[in-house]
Length: 474
Ligand code: NAD
Image (cartoon, rainbow, N blue to C red):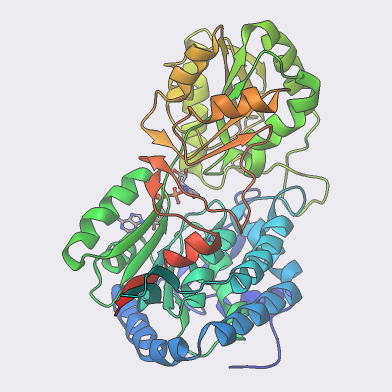
């Protein structure tokens, strides 16, 4: 354990994590410039990390909750000391701007989640105490937790996985997305200034390393955030070792605007609900259902707000929207919007990427008069293109919202909270927000319904997911 930070400048941070030779080139999705070379770890490196984690875990578990929480708080301090360096690296590798709900916000959330996770109280539950017998429910550490993450919020989602795992007395091996390994390596390097050796490590490899991790006999649980297809592959690879799984998978969140909503008042919330991180967010608003009485007014208000939000290179302070993180995602968004246009849907804003510029920029796009079965509605676009579907009865809107096999988040927009709650209760999603969308809170459990996954993150429920329940009965 080191005591003095040396990782508070961008240059030092990068120096500490990049591969000296070999590795894989990582380039800035906004400019194409090289950010650095990421080490390309192998399954042998993964095995070594798991061995080190198994060796370190018993002493970590023996510290107890209070001491481990103190470590998490010191880790949060370290993240805050390196916050600007971390945000710059995140911005360059992921593409998200420094400002708006983006890179600086994400690094701030890492510190906030570490502190919140340190603060929760988890006491044994007394289940029966009737004078004849007593039964208590305890949570023991699981052992070693594998954390596999995506490229959209690489630092924050890593913290969502590692903080509760560490708090519960587990060691953690993280496998970041191959698109954003530097961000996660940097975050772990900063946090590891405070943690005992071996308790937290990062294996920066590709899909093969992820597959091995999901099947590894030395891993007791996998925390996975990513696509539903990969989630299913992880269920299969983890079956032989009967691993515990928390799966936060893809979504296609619906928002329903009721006829009594005020278009001008909700436009900003709708916009950020859909376009946070340039639409590359699991629980972003991806299909907007608007009642016919206020359809045109909501479309106009959204166009008015969206048209003023600057998109560009992340390190330029004025920008609040950035590029798509990678070419594959850019192509998905471009193809879906093209299909919508070909079907006769009406593009209100954007819809045409500028040719010949560097970077994977797709303009902020709003598409109206689109059918519910159009691919831009039915598939997860994961980018800055929002379809706006007109409905005439609330029943019809609820049926359309529930019509897909995913259910991560959803939202209802109305001037009448009681009416909104009634509709919310009928939507098949893990979270339904009212007059906001995607607002996560470290104290409030978060998880998906249907094929959006299972298991809960955050809060005391999240801690329980990283422990082995044990009943002690006498
Ligand atoms: P992805 O599934 O392609 O990759 C995620 C991770 O899984 C990467 O680290 C990848 O290397 C690894 N991986 C790939 N194949 C694997 C395998 N067979 N076994 C083990 N690991 C494997 O997802 P992505 O494209 O990085 O992320 C975008 C998706 O993630 C979207 O669908 C989005 O909705 C979802 N997401 C969900 C949440 C949530 O909380 N529910 C949050 C963020 C993103």
